[in-house]
Length: 473
Ligand code: G6P
Image 1 (cartoon, rainbow, N blue to C red):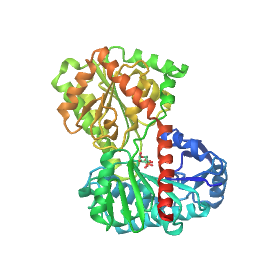
Image 2: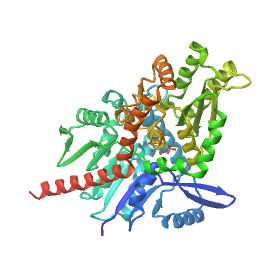
Image 3: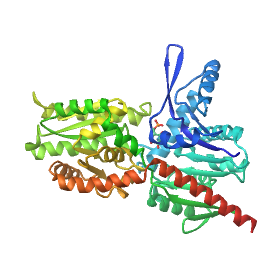
C-alpha cells in the first residue's frame, strides 16, 4: 500500500514546556485541518520541525514517541540551524524578496545559504528514511524549495507535489537572489507545482525559462527528460468551522460583550501575524488620516487591532513591533478622550472562539497587506458573517482579492483610498452589504480547504499518470 508524506517546515502542533515536561497541542491552522484528512490516515505521515529547540536526547526520544502516535515525524533543528536556515535564509532572504522587499529587508550571507542547503538535506534524509516507491510526497512552502529535487535525485519515479504558500515574485525581483538557479532547480524536482494565483504561476514560468535552460509550453516546463506542471490552486479555509462557531454559546457570550463595549461606535477589525508584509503601519496611517481629515468620525469609529507575535527574533520584526507600539501610542494619545480610545491594540494570540466573536461582531474587517500569497483572515471574516452583513476592505496585493471581488478592493499604498474605503464601509447600506457578502460567502463555502486538498491531490495523481504513460510510449 502506498502512502502520502506531507513535509513542511513546521509540524501542525504546538509544543510547550512546563517544568521538565513537554506538552503537545494540535495546531488550529487551516493547513493542519485541511491536511488532517490525509496525514492521519493509514501509514501516512507529516514530517516537520516541532518549532522549539530541544537538545536533550531523552527529551527528543520522548517527543518523537508522542508525535508518532499522531502520525507526525519531527526534524530537530540545532540553534545554529534555526538562526541560519529559518531566520537567516528563509526569513531574511526568501520572505522579503518574495514579498517585494529588497535592500533593507533582504540580507545575503553565504553561511545562511549553506545552512538552508544543509537543512533541506536533513529533511530529505527524513523523507528517504520512510518513503517507498509508489508513495506520494507533498512539500509545502518557501523553507523547503530545494527538497523536491533532492528527493528526486534518489527516487526518480516518486510522485512529488510542491505548493508555495507565499507569492512567487516577478523575475525582476527573483533574479536578485544569488542562488536563484539552485532554488528553481530545487522546485522543478516536483511533478506538480502549485501557487495561489495565476500571477504567481506566470512569474514562476517566466523566471524558470529566463534563468534556466528549460522550455515551457502553456503551463508545462520541460527540463531534461521530465515535464513539470505548474498551476494555480487558491487555498480555502475550514468554512464550516467559521460559519458554525458564531452559534456556539461561548462565542455568543463574547459577541454580546463586544457589542456592549462598542455600542456607540462602528468596529473595524484588523488581525495579522506581526509582519512588515501585512501593511500594519500603513493601515494605522490611513486610520489616523480618517481621524485627522474627518474629525466627525472621532468617537464613532474604533479599531480593534490584533497582532499575533511572530519571528520576533528576526531584527526587522522586532523593529516593526516597536514602530507599531509607537504609532498606536501616538494616535491614541492624540485623539482619545475619557469615553473613547481610537485603537484597541493587542500583541498576542487569541483562542479561535474570541476571533470568531470579533469576526462576527465587527462592522468592517480591514485587510490591507502590502503583499500576501492568499490571506486567510479575509476568508475567515467572510465565513463568519452568517447574516450576510459586514464589509470587507481588501488589498489588491493579497491573493484573495482575485476571488473576493465583492470586497472594497484598495491599493494599500494609497492612504487616501484606504481612508475613503473605511468611510464607504461604515456608511454602506445594509442591502449592499448583504449583496456583496452573500456572493463572497458562497465562494468561500464552495472553495474550502477540503476542496483545495482534493483538487491538488487529484491533479498530482493525473499528472503522474500522464508522465508515466508518456514514458512507456
Ligand atoms: C506563513 C508561511 C508559513 C509559516 C507561517 C508562520 O503563513 O507561509 O510557512 O509557517 O507564515 O510563520 P512561522 O515563521 O512562524 O512558521
